[in-house]
Length: 305
Image (cartoon, rainbow, N blue to C red; front, top):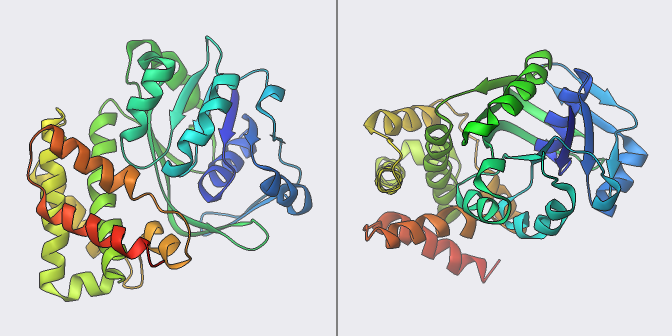
């Protein structure tokens, strides 16, 4: 099975290396800057689940040099999606499938319109990892899961093939028949968590210690639940309570990647996550005042960042 990983950052680099060590044929598509790091330092994982070292990772910087791809895994940020489209058009052949690991749902509509719904597999990643100055991957928790599943009848075979390699790899993976609910469940949580931590410039402890702030988090979860239901996804109060439990179990100094990126003056996924949720709410004529407020605050702060 030939797997192309678009992106060799913390997420793509981690899962690509784990799959490679299991014997899968992995090729990264990276930019020139990342290519220089890979040549100089290779790919190294420092993890509580076991370290790994890939001294000479297989990569290309030009998509025309990638001639075979059974599966393309998208491991980029949402704001980089449009920049990968031309690369995908070059790589994707009639028998190639695409597995996005991006947060949110906006990309599914775009990719299905361009490549056909039958080619887009449902997927998400749960992992806390960063890159150090050498481009090595620092994985700081035991969670390292890819969840995936078919969104079309034609995808059962490719999911089975991919499942074979994830089972062999030193990582967690779930092949589920409820992938849309899993995607939306994470979308609900990450929209509330990233939105509140970024807008208020706080970590988990501040959200949990102040009841009014915690209530804002819960209100966004409810607003996202209603959007999901309007989209035909059966998120319930049980999912909301599960998201609350998730944040309660996080370390007090934990925060979202959006908050971290915002602090560093980097691009953030505001439009891909909160912005698109508001678009869906408007389309369904739903009131989402808390989400709209959080979005507006981050937009205003972005002009000063």
